[in-house]
Length: 423
Ligand code: SF4
Image 1 (spheres, rainbow, N blue to C red):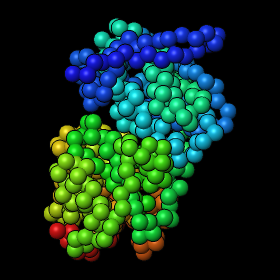
Image 2 (image 1 turned 30 degrees about the horizontal axis):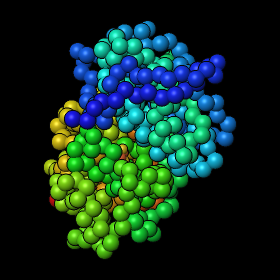
Image 3 (image 1 turned 90 degrees about the horizontal axis):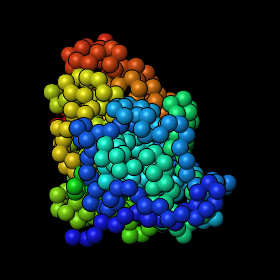
Image 4 (image 1 turned 135 degrees about the vertical axis):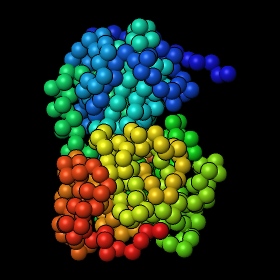
């Protein structure tokens, strides 16, 4: 077995004195998919992470707020990871590449579990790691050192702040939402038919074996972090990394959404588990599930309507399950007819259920998702000849049962009643 190496990096402290610091826990790829179970848990934090490319950076790391020992047994404390990176050869698109790498950099540390991304960040610290001396400052140090060593040719200065002060973390995460939104809009207008290649991502294979995302202009990766330009930037940075450019090749199958080049790649990258993938369908070899997906769309076959789960909403849905229950039911990395993992933004991108009628199939989604997507959703609905569609879709403030959802949809004259069956 390969020897586990301590993570040692030269760095300067606040006084500019050079130090060689080692992590107090083991650090290795084999810990990447390991969980921190409830009986091992010292503290869990939820919050956000954001990396910005900047022209002016400090170089270092710090903690804003209380240290880890103040959060013993804490289950839901707010936290923010703020990173600035400076360098002459950086593009704005690299921000998402750096950001997605935080997952791996942190998860290699034994006893620290990073899950989710952007505003869905969850961080779990084990008792053992904290007893050994792992602190929030260690986390900041780890991110600082990981980014510096991983991207040493382009990341000249890196500044990491772990914000555990709840008010400051809240304010930072609110500001981060605007940045995520700007990023989401940057591929708007680019069509799948206008490009010869898509991009793949296999980062989630560490926790969802065989999982492959195909990232197209009209389909952002299921976690919402990697859009088409972000994946392209990642390949430019690291051609042998977890993202690959995949030539589409000729269309394949009886319905659009499959291409020879994409299917060949998916088959190989999934170790033969996925023979085909149709990024336009929820019933015809739909994209598989990962542990990081922001949403799950679930078809109710008896009524041909779709219920959308959002990771941020943990209440009941008309399917009779909440997000966590639904996620637990699904074999990660698998393609399941009638179910699809996806990013929130996918709902208003062109690939979403293109074969099944797109957003006109949605009969229920949580109010937080309706609120987030309202402007773009209304724009798209109007373009589809269905202005006011959002109001015809039920949410948890109206009902969480299938029967009452259908009654509500009918009262509102929802267009899905006039659509042909999906299967
Ligand atoms: S969900 Fe997809 S795009 Fe996002 S990190 Fe996982 S494999 Fe990559």
